[in-house]
Image (cartoon, rainbow, N blue to C red):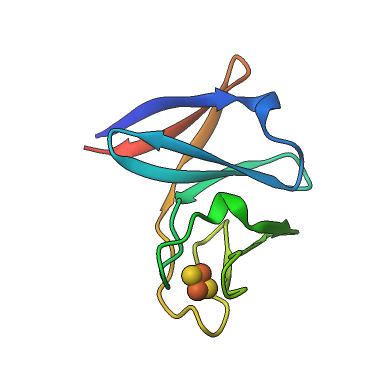
Length: 105
Ligand code: FES
């Protein structure tokens, strides 16, 4: 079963940007794409646990601020050294202007 968590206002995230969201001891990164879609991943880089919300969004990619590792924030795919472990992704929906992320039970 999926539990939907209210993360932020849709307008809290600029287009082609990312914000950090912490919930019950976990940290997530929530993205707004250039074409106005929303996505969510684990918030920490799989290389050295750096907050990806401090990184740079370019098109469908998040670049980690520490060693410039890159992931697709849409699929979680690691896109080259030094990152080799994919990011976990989460479903997202927008309800009444709020960004909701879906967490498994
Ligand atoms: S900590 Fe993210 S690429 Fe190294």
